Length: 273
Image (cartoon, rainbow, N blue to C red):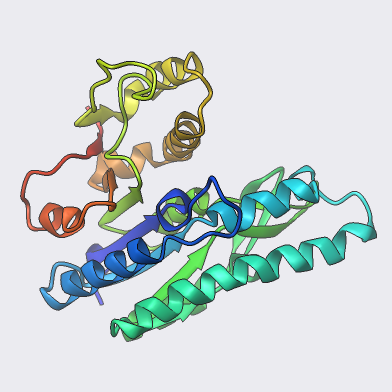
């Protein structure tokens, strides 16, 4: 394994689940995504792969219901956190099973066993086992989770934050965010008919883009994109050194494959200029 060949691929919760309905999978999408990733591996377009997944409608409802996002308040929350983890584990196992069925050697891993945070920010991690299995040719699958938090007791650890951290720890060549939208728009496409996709977004211009998103309607799509862009702020030095970052949709088939082949597709590349 050469570190330069590593792709960290974040599969968004909005891609894998129907966020309008608690605990509802997008089975056909997951199956299509798994098929396309296997095709990319077989074609040699992907050498070493780590998949990070969002939890979507499997994680957000119970976290909000039990107020887990506010941190540890008392022991009565512990059984609620256990239940939440079990619900999310159903999603993890389903994703893993579909990928394994396509012939992808998934190694299912849990962030709660590998990271520690402080006020919802990862401050310590132990990824040696992940690196080891990756070096053998396995595909680690790790997703959003609850993590032990030195200040809050426990806190939410987003998949975006995990993906960004792994891209740094593994010295990845690519960091890609697969969502249900083609990329970043200059305004909320749900409100502005003239909203245009930003084919390139300068990492040094993120502040301006974030301000525009703050002025948007506060829709779920805008909020999710804002969080994703915020997580990318720390990658500025990596992008300057050559990390290739892109936000794109995997709702339509072959977008990932075409991009890795060098063909033109709709997406947003995050660049340093």
